[in-house]
Length: 118
Image (cartoon, one colour):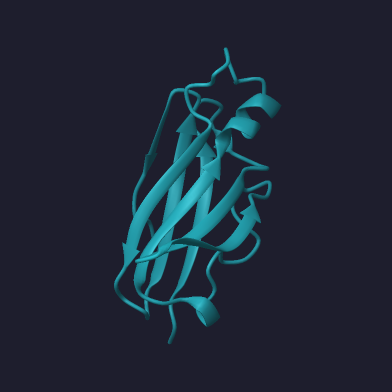
C-alpha cells in the first residue's frame, strides 16, 4: 500500500474551517525546491483530494506553503499592512512510503500551529 499526504486549515480565531486558502507543495532537493502540487481548501478547510496522492508519494523533504494573507483579507481579519502573517511555510520530512501523512494548519491573524495528524 502506498502512502499519501493530506492537509487542512482551521481558523481558530473564527472557530471554523478556512475555506479558499491556496496551498503549494514543494519537494526539497539538493538543487532547491520544486513545486509539485497546488490546491485550494474547500468549505471544510480541506483539499478535495490528497495534495500528494499515492502515485507521486515518496520519502523526502517537503514544504507546504499556505497563502493565509489572502484568506485573512477576504474574511476581514487582515489588520494593518504589512500583515503579520501572509504566507506560512511548513517544512517536514516523509520517511515511510506506506503511511498516510496529514499536516494540518491552525491559523489566526497573529499565530499558527501545526502537527502530524492522522
